[in-house]
Image 1 (cartoon, rainbow, N blue to C red):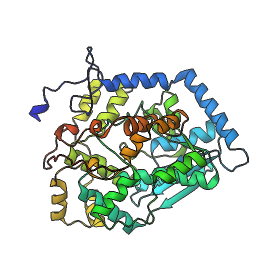
Image 2 (image 1 turned 30 degrees about the vertical axis):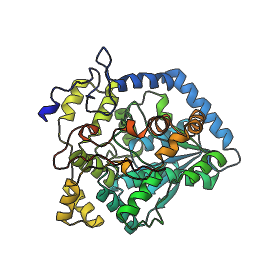
Image 3 (image 1 turned 180 degrees about the vertical axis):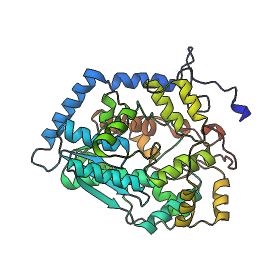
Image 4 (image 1 turned 90 degrees about the horizontal axis):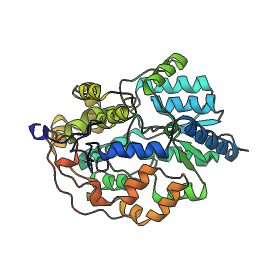
Length: 412
């Protein structure tokens, strides 16, 4: 760690020179803080944000005429998705269909939170449960591939399930719970995901069979956007979202329970964020979260520095569960954790296709079908700009694992 002690740090947030594609201006402020300022202009809060929200909701209601629902909202039992259900139903009077993907790793608290919110708001639920044995085989493949994106099968399936629910019921809008003011946006180079990546990894390191895991293939995705006209919207972008205040509100109003940390309502996400990414890849997602909260004025830099120095909590029982369910002995698990680090560019993905279709995705972004972050990371930045695998690709060099340069093998 001594090698990192003299690295330049942002004077505003807690990002430093180990963050992929970071730069600092003459005032010592990092490019991600400047990007935040740009996004605040693009996605205003206050009265301007309320006007945008109101206009979008009016469009949703118009598009939903003659249908059972106006909007699909993904639910996980987490703070953001739970609050969106309240916001859509109680504040804006939208007819909501909740959608949930069960990767078989839901925590008890998450299940209870979902039940309480849906019952209190009288909201219907569309759910898809993956076959347990199939998911464990796919999960195991990602461990054997030695890439950081072990939760990508779930993340892609979540997006697919939202579209599946919307398409089934003729819904034209999906609400997503991300807030750049409280979560930030992960730097290019930390993670990559698409459906072809999932299938390629499982073909190389598993049996390749995918039957019940929802896939967001490019033809399927294009059909949902171009034919079914399903758009995505992030309502939390348009007001000063107070995360701590929201937690208290949900607890007081619905008996909602806090689960201890960002994305910790699901045990596989908890495992990835609090154990695997930190110990194998040196990626601590609190840097992104705390930096976002600093920029939003919800956390002081000194408090963030103190909190980031604390070791992330981890329940060793979840490690035992993961090893048992995925089928790793202790010796095999040690080999997984010490295997050379790999990178998405070593595998077949849609990345080069996204780059070739950049003009199309620019149009889709402007029309509200894809997000700004997707367009920038997946269509504008090239593979070599997403940072090849090497120690500086990751926030902190971990102990045990080593880095290996990727072969140029990405074929869309």
